[in-house]
Amino acid sequence: MTLGAAPPPAGLGHDPWVTAVEKLRTRRAGLWTGALEALPAPAVPEVAAELEELGYGSLWFGEAYGRDSLIQAQLLLGATSSMVIGTGIATIYARGPMAMNAGARTLEALAPGRFLLGLGVSHQPLVERDRGQAYLPPLRAMRQYLDAMAAAPFLAADQVVPPIVLAALGPKMLELARDRTAGAHPYLVTPQHTRTARAALGEGPLLVVEQAAVLGQDRAESLRRAHEHLNIYTGLPNYRNNWLREGFDEATDLVRGGSEKLADALVVMGDEQAILARVREHLDAGADHVVVQVLADRLGSVPREDWRALAPALREA
Image 1 (tube, rainbow, N blue to C red):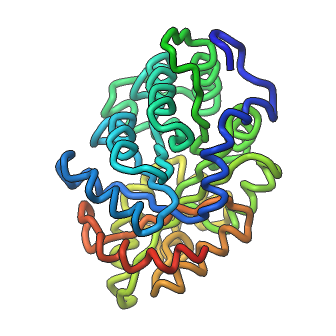
Image 2 (image 1 turned 90 degrees about the horizontal axis):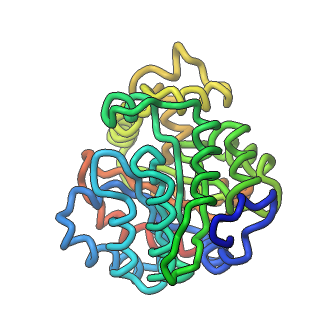
Image 3 (image 1 turned 45 degrees about the horizontal axis):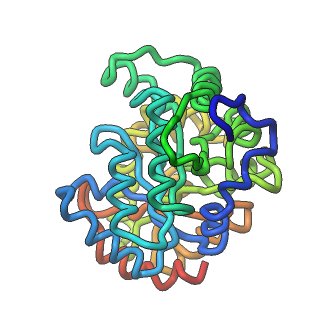
């Protein structure tokens, strides 16, 4: 994409991004975690380096109340040499499109072919209550943001563009991801949704799916962790609307923390092979890459032993 150019037409603009995209399609399982926020920043590189040694193909993380996502990405890229690092997601309300464009290009220049910029519209309560900004209609906000990124001047020598994927759940955002970016990164979804997303995206675009998991616990403890994980998300309209589209019942399933049915659908619980089987369900449904979010015994814990135990199975994905 040249300086100040209009956004590329549908299906174009992917050639400069092939390296990172193909890495994810070759090494088909990675990790998604918010747990690194619990560590002091100087301790993060050692953990990231170990995850790379364990064979995980990628490492993704969100952006809400912790570190700036682009600075966190730089920290992780600097600690690794082959793992793909993705923002899942960098919120468009955290920085302007010119700043997002500049930061993403700089990261791509520092670690060519290893950074993916996941963008999302976040959620109305987080944007209006916590950031003090007006929450615009999601599709319009994302389309305008992509337009502004494409038109943003960037005069540094680093004339490279990383792949962009969108946090897309509904059909219209999936279409925007298909037409304007390298693909989509759905979060908190079922294999059924993955099949729907692939149909909406078509053959070419990248589909990176997040899957929550509880490893090696009994049923009661697994459900406790699943409900704790779902507690905040069941209060957010973007997720609730998506689950309603999938056929879950608002009165019985979308209670705070979710019903047992919702927990089973969104969080795989069991041993390494059970988690691998769910990952393969997403891959069979059309995902290119699945990032597993391992749920620890409490929010904020870093599940390093679980990551170590799960790595051999996920290398088989």
